Image (tube, rainbow, N blue to C red; front, side, top):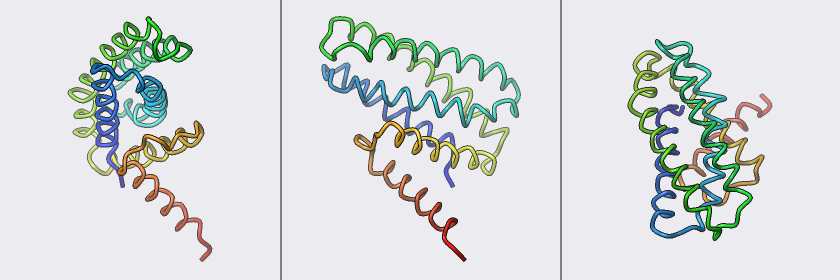
Length: 170
């Protein structure tokens, strides 16, 4: 069982490391950042945000988070067609970094603690498992396995093992 908050925080840290690499002059991480953000916004909206109506103020939190996601998606859509070395990449990436950093701060200090408090560990595990599976499917759909951490590959392995054991004939 996976805790949804822990999985989201792990993804936030991964993207944060890529932001640091970009800020240190490594523009080669831009395509990976765009892919990660696209996958992350997609699965967040599909899985953990679906339980937000169950918590106090959840509808307001969901609307705000989805608005922030739209801003990130628009910026990514402007970045993706450009070459990594283009002049616009720097300002667009700074916009993305600023917006995502703000979003992550809100999510980790307000939304996720509220979810944990009101839903409890058992309820957080259900969207956690679904989140891990949604990420696996979204990455596979995009043909992305490169750039996954050892822990992410392990999570994919555990999910595959769980699926295989439930699908095995009895």
